[in-house]
Every structure is written in C-alpha cells, then in structure tokens.
Image 1 (cartoon, rainbow, N blue to C red):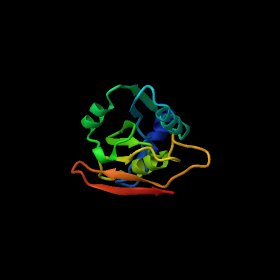
Image 2 (image 1 turned 60 degrees about the horizontal axis):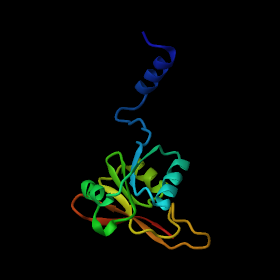
Image 3 (image 1 turned 45 degrees about the vertical axis):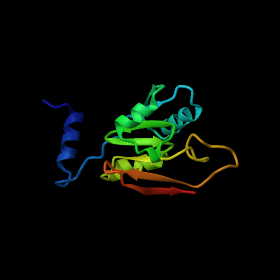
Image 4 (image 1 turned 135 degrees about the vertical axis):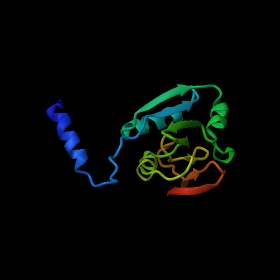
Length: 149
C-alpha cells in the first residue's frame, strides 16, 4: 500500500485546514544572457548563493528574447530571466524574487532597469547608488515594487 514515509506525508497533508496551500519551492530560473557579460554571471552567482536553481542560456540576440517575453523597452537591462510565469529583467535581488514567489502578485514581472552600482552582480567596493525594483504588467503599467538605497 503506502510506505511509512508516504503515509506520514499523506496524513500531514490531510491535517491541513481546508484551503491551506502547501508552500512550493521556487521554480528554476532560466537566464538568457550575453556570453561575454561578466556582471550577468555575477548575478547568477548571487541567485545560486541564495538557494535558487539557475540554468543559463547564452545568446547574441537578447532583444529577441526581451520582445518574446514582453519586457518594456523602458525597463531594459543586460539579461532576461524566466521565473515560473514571471519575467525578470536585470539585476533584481534574490530577496525580491523570494517576495514575488511568496506573494504571487498579478504582474508580468520585475525589473531593475540599467545596471545600477551596488545591485547584485554590479557590486563595486565603496560605490553604491539607490535603485528601484519595478513591477510591470501586460498592459504596460510600471510601478515601484521595492526600493534599495
């Protein structure tokens, strides 16, 4: 019938209140990047250090990826990722990815436009500039999701 481990898991799931969702692990990030960009690799290292599974795809045509995934031109940066149903553009911190996965807002994605100093992958000792993580939806609305200083 059921192994002892499987039986315990089943009983634990049945003990949850009705409508209670079981937390799921975040999906693997699929990162599209320029093969010659060092900061993109550093961003991937940041994500992996924070426990994310990451698969990278080197491409010489990032603009085609951005168009296909619906990244607004105003939010463009140096790499584009897919995170479940979300699009992630640029040097978005792992903490923002964790938040979006936890809260599951009705947005298309997150972006850190440009390449602000001090954002993950863009660290320079003694140099840091404030930046915003922006959310965007399929209708083109852009809002501040989080501020970093």
